[in-house]
Image 1 (tube, rainbow, N blue to C red):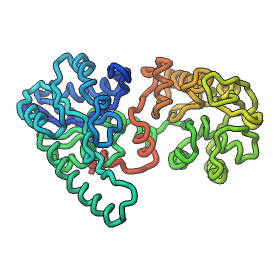
Image 2 (tube, helix red, strand yellow; image 1 turned 90 degrees about the horizontal axis):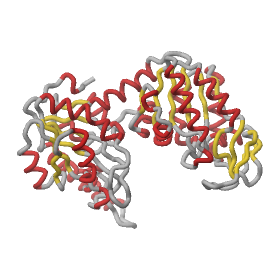
Image 3 (cartoon, helix red, strand yellow; image 1 turned 90 degrees about the vertical axis):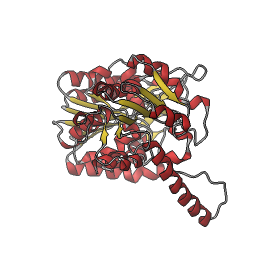
Image 4 (cartoon, rainbow, N blue to C red; image 1 turned 120 degrees about the vertical axis):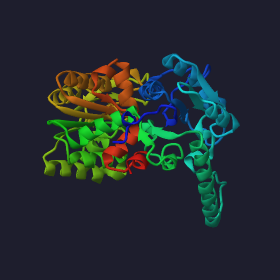
Amino acid sequence: MVTIDNFNFKGLRAIVRVDFNVPLDKKTFEVTDDTRIRGALPTINKILNDGGSCILMSHLGRPDGVPQEKYSLKHVIPVLSKHLGREVKFADDCVGESAKQLAGSLKPGEVLLLENVRFYLEEEGKPKLPEGVSDEEKKAAKEEMKKRQKEFTAKLASLADCYVNDAFGTAHRAHASTTLIAAHFPGKSMFGYLIEAELKAMDKVLHAPDHPFTAIMGGAKVSDKIMVIERMLEKVDNLIIGGGMTYTFIKAQGGKIGKSLCEEDKLDVALQILEKAKAKGVKVYLPVDAVNGDAFDANANTSVTKVNETPDGWMGLDIGPETIALFSGVIKKSKTILWNGPMGVFEFEKFAAGTSAIAKAIAEATAAGAFSLVGGGDSVAAVNKNKLADKISYVSTGGGAMLEYIEGKELPGIKAIRG
């Protein structure tokens, strides 16, 4: 693996793609969760301790090429400066005059943060097109954007002597700052510590798991997880399914699901997954009971029933107590655990118990010697809410990137450096 451990940054300016896409308070624009900022610190400190300087670039939100106050990266400077124990300079444009001047005068040990790279459409390389344009015009616009993206990437690259990608959360995007820029630094492009740790954790789960190996898949839709589930069937001993996708499986088997979420066009797929699992000797665990709500609402009335006996007009919004006991038992006997996706509507307190229980069971299994990898927004939120992050072997920073890597897809940001 091409990592910064094997590189000396003395006297060099390193341009580092970090993931500072952090949540901000809507009124004050203060950072409300600094996990991603803290995740970048080991890489930044290695470069500075070597005697190099750091130029940090990131996106924040989806500004679609329009500079906006609420998406400005200047809001992360107080937190970043505090963690680094030094002043962080800020360029109010990622490729403009201020970026050029500040990067050019950067001294060893100094840190410069560039403004949001997504204030330029060239970062993502997608032209904005009005409705009703012809195919010819679309083609011409794409060609023009390709040219502009090339120029934009060259401007970013001109600020530095080497490139470090430490933004796993965007490694599945072929953007200027995550992928294209690497070509400007042959032999001087590498992964930071965060990406290195992500890849090691996922490679352990995919290529060297201890058994029994249990994958826990939650979330709303089967369609979002089909590829991951199919890949996991080649590797796991147990597959636990929860969340909204449960009901596609339950209906496919003839159960009553009331108003629960269901992908009618995926009933056959659900049955095929169960058949494939059986053929491969993988044990599939579906919920046996559920906490139902009479509305999709934080204050809904609740009832607990068998998962395949949801009353008319009600919907399953969390796993029930019997299921929590069943799933927890399987998890605690496991030696490798992969978890992606909540067991219920975790953002509503009344329907959060199942997801929290899974987080706690994984922490217990980890304490007993299992290797656990957790990724995906709600799963990570459940781990953090229950203060269990330090009791999980690895908490991934990239939900989408993690899923694509597990599916076996080549991530552009990884390929650009690994080759």
